[in-house]
Image (cartoon, rainbow over the protein chains, first blue to last red):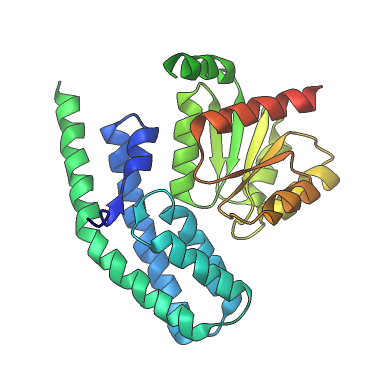
Length: 127
Length: 137
């Protein structure tokens, strides 16, 4: 059986299943990662600016290590490495497509987990 | 395990920590871990803000410094703190890099230690305590 597309273990374990905290982290992730991916996409598609690609993939990489969307961290590590070496634009393009596809697949899962924790948070506040 | 966590929480109680990190997600993780273990935490988003804060106050016991912040990065910020400000406050570099060279670069820049993100809460707190102790001695 394949692993789930999103692995939330780190934030649940770290927070001792604190629904408020998990909700806030997922919300931040959903605010920042799509915008970061959009900046990466624009840079990769419109330029050969390897230093910017390197910085942007590095920035996303640390978010991808908190909430683990399948393959995203490894693909960003690879992209950062290629960009640092100023080579492999074709592979960078392929990695970008993979990142965008997997993130779009993960979005409903992320939204659902956020909503689940929002409900738990409200229930906790009522009690 | 639970007893160990409680011991660390007591040890970090009252320690003032400056977190310089431009990724808000990582900033939130660091703040949560540190506050949960008793520390007072203030966060900034770049090296310039960190320097300005350190110029205003000497209340901090340790700085957690992301090495690849946008703008003034962690290396340049640390070099400024060490050379221009002549400040020996303990500085721990935060990196998302798995490269072995990251630690060497942190040391060369004047940092006391380096830790890989995402943090293991207990290891991070133990490192903070050991770095503070080392600098005091």
